Length: 413
Image (cartoon, rainbow, N blue to C red; front, side, top):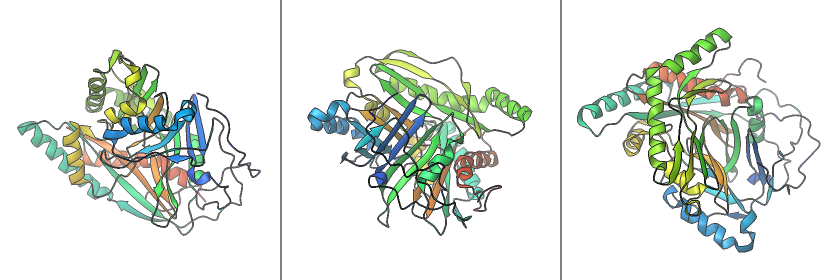
C-alpha cells in the first residue's frame, strides 16, 4: 500500500541505527508525534500532529471517527487517523491526524554508540506468581465447567519493568526489531507521561486483528504457540508438535469461532480454512487462520466499527469475553495499558488496518515495560505457560540487548 509522500526531510546524514539505550535529543520538531507501521506490502510513516481525535471507549469508536472525518470537510478524502486502542474496552484510545504522511521510512540521526547501560529489572509479577495465577485460572475454568456458564479460556499476561540511567530511544528499539521481516513493526505515541514527555508503544506483532478495503475484510488470528529452537531438527519437531497439539488446536478454535460469529451478521462470503496452519516469527511458532469476508453494507461498516466489534478477541482475552475479562481483572495486578490492544490506521473512506499490540513495550523516559501473555485452557501447565511468556518476551528483550533479569544479553553493549 502507498501513502502520499509529503514527509519533510528529517535526515541528519544517518547511516546506521541508533542504540536504544539513550534518547537522541536532536530529532527535529514533529518527531515526538511520529507514527510508524511496517509490514509486508505496507509501509506507513508519519510525523507531527495536525489534530487529536476525541478520545473515548471502544464502544463509541465508530461514531467518533465518523464525526471526526465529517468535521474535516474538504480535507477528509486524504485524511488519516493513526494511533492505538487500549486493551480495556472502557479505556480511552489515542488517535490523531498527523501532519505528514509517507511510505518511506524516517531517516535516522547518527550518533556515537552509547556505553553498555545498567538495567534494573522488576517483574510484574515474577514467574512463580504468574504460574500460581495460571493454576488459579485453571481452577476457575474447571469450576465453570461444573456450574456454568462455561469459561473455556483466559489469557493471562505479565510484564517486566526495565529501568536504566539514561533516556531510552524508542526509535532505536523500533529499528532493532527489524531483524524479523515476517511481522508488523509499529511505533506510536500513546500519551504524555508523568514527566511531561511522550510515552510510546513499540513492538513487532505477528497478528492482524482486522483489515478493511472497500467491502473486503480480512482477519488473521493467532492462538497456540511454541518456542522456536536454534537447532533446525528440534525447531521442525516443535512446529510439528504444535500443529498436532489437541490443547493448542482447541485454544485456537475458540478464537476463530468467536471472530466468525461476530462477523457473520455483517458479512457475506465468510470463509476460513478447515484447520489452522503454522505461522512463525523469529522466536515463536503459532497456529494461525486467515479469515476473509465481504461486507454486506460497506458504506455502514468502517475499519473502526470492525475493530470495536472484534476487540479483544479470545486470542488476548479469552472466551466467553466478559467472563474472561472478569477473571483477568481478578488475577492480574498490573495495568496492560495498550498492550494487547490494537495499533493501526484508518482513512475517511472507512478503510484501515488494526494489528493486535503484541511483542511490544511501552517506553517512557528511562523506563521500558515489556509485556507477554499466554492462553490458559483446560490442559494448560502453569510452568509451561510461564515458559511461553518468557519466550514471547524475547522479541523485545533481544532488541534491547538485555535479558529478563536485567543483565546484558550475550553480545549486547
